[in-house]
Length: 145
Image (tube, rainbow, N blue to C red; front, side, top):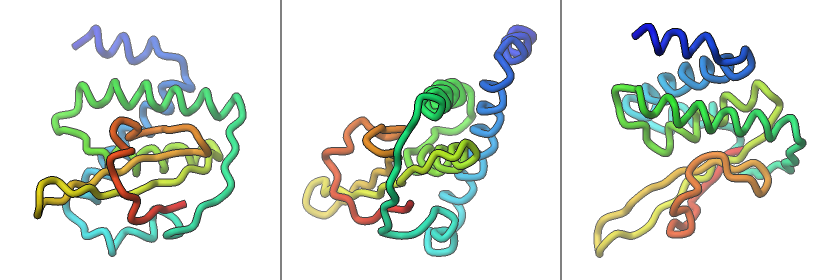
């Protein structure tokens, strides 16, 4: 336990700030996704089917890298399995604080004859932030910017 506390405080301030925000928004997204219908909170995700122009500079890219690193850290220690939609919501909300515009994509794929699978991923420009693995297998049904 003391090792984890010591490790937490050994992280530099910027990274710790992103870690704290990522944790908060993952918990927030967990509650939204698991207990509230999408139609009630979709306006919190941005404009539906609107894609803004997104360009990333070097400073913003460093924030994205830190977010990904902290997301991996938190996924290992959280008591629930973090889903792709939760990752994308948390990423979008954390990166807003650093003036990084991102688009959250929602996709579906047919599994068998009657089952549908869903996936969510987050991109800023051409850069994937979350959900890159397997996104090509899904058809985009909507996106939020």
